[in-house]
Length: 295
Length: 305
Image (cartoon, rainbow over the protein chains, first blue to last red):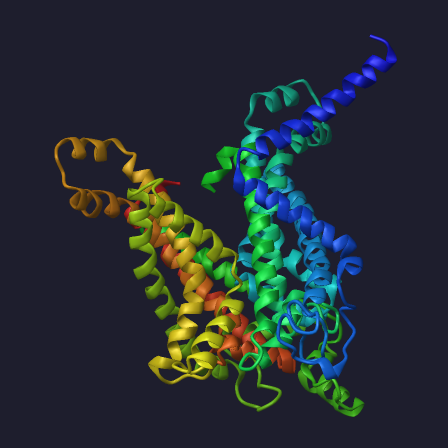
């Protein structure tokens, strides 16, 4: 095989992987729907500002509280005259950033803690798992709310608050995965042949827990997006005037008796997003690791 | 069994102890706690005086020790706004929160368990698909948004139910439905899978073959056995409901602990926050403990582990 053939071969392998992904995806309509929603969200969060029909911050007071389908405002305007559709489109970015960044941060902390606890066991494990128990002894939303109130509002701080409250789920699952892996023969063999602890961790344990981490992360993103919306709705989290679905609902709740469109559409955006992410996460789990379904 | 209970009880105490420690250091980590305990516009002399008065100028371990000793005695200091005992204020609001959480729990069980059982029994029929589909959608709906929509329909448009406040049955209807939504979705899915597990067992097939009627099959054999995991989930969900009531209570201005905590966070009234978080951690731990003991009681295999 000459060089170009090798390259062709690698390209073929890659395209066949992509093909394989879509072939499997096409068998599940919920998986496809979820994937479609995620692609749309990513698209909106990158190009939102160019797609939005109006400037989401532009507030002509004279055009306040216009009902949907008036004056070219498809979903109406809010109390300050800002176009709701534009704010929802641009607000997608906040939800995407928060969902993904929190999943990465919480996943990272949780994986490190879970691997250490599961691999080294003993008192390290006991101490770490007690910390997990304590964190789990607070309701998730309440914990996020209290942490956010203490460290302050804003995009970065809400991500930190969500991750500090959310890493424990990862730590628990990863720990039990590592505990199970440790008993496997190939690990015992590696230990017996004198492979260093560090090498076992990096070369044998980490690659094998990658799949559960990805699945768990994708399933948690929906939870984080809803939690951020709840916290922002309560006046913490992402602050106005930055368009985010949660604070749009917070501002809109005062007009509930007169203008229903202020609260209806951002809520629907949250539901579609959460559904899409959950559908895709469920499909990912069923495809990659059906055993996890019971958990 | 007694061994198991004592062991778990010790764990509860450790968790509550650690929870207090975490809360203490969380507040201290955020910088000078005096600024947290005072309104943002407080004059400098007041800050100095307050720091002295609360002992924030002493070594951290002394403060920690004192905080723990006071906390064990239920003393979290006074509300910065009203000057009332912080724990007392929290306890005053407790009945309203319990009322809401229990009502929501009962409503969701009454709706979800029959739905889940039927779904499992009619597996893969249209009924099952719709039931499971709805419960998936239900879990994606933020419950504060659902509450707002209910207010819009029943209070703003139809004007048949009050949108906020407490005190009567009609005040309870909307918040209870809002709070129950999430539990219903979870219970339906869970009851369905617990029932499916049992329905696949050999003894169910045997009794079917022996001519047991459908209703006796479900009620006498299957439901009884699938109740074990369901009870555990229900007990655990009471904790989630109690804590998760924060958002619902705010939406409906329900006079419970959740709304008190929210107001205290907005006002930076941290003694109340500390007391509230402490109480919720205890309730959570106790509920978990009861669920575990209940589970161990009905399933002896657990006790040995």
